[in-house]
Length: 76
Length: 76
Image (cartoon, helix red, strand yellow):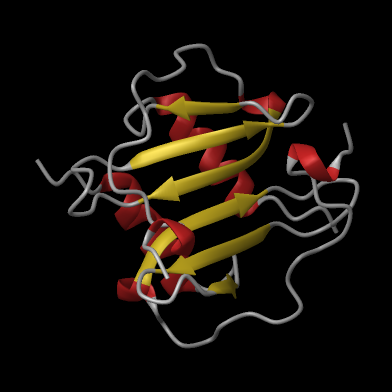
């Protein structure tokens, strides 16, 4: 079983990050902590309509707000 | 192109959530906002060593802490 088959990436996945606040188009967000293969935390959003993956800047205030909103949002 | 091929799930993915604080075993975390197919925010962690997917409780204080730590962690 390869590391890749376990979903472990052996390098950073993000080259550049989205600067526009695209929060309302986001279907899901992946958080990848810094690890031995990539020294920076990576945040990868999947867009609702297109399924496109977009890297986000973990330092950007709008990104932090989007994540806090997902965490606090209870639709009930 | 099906919705599923876009990575859109048509139902909730979590049945139960992990109660033990497993933060240090987490390789990545997926945040799925509440949507028309699942009325609750879902948090799915992938474990480092096994690649196993584990649902986390968005309300659990340790889960919030783990996510804040990932967001603030800069390994540089």
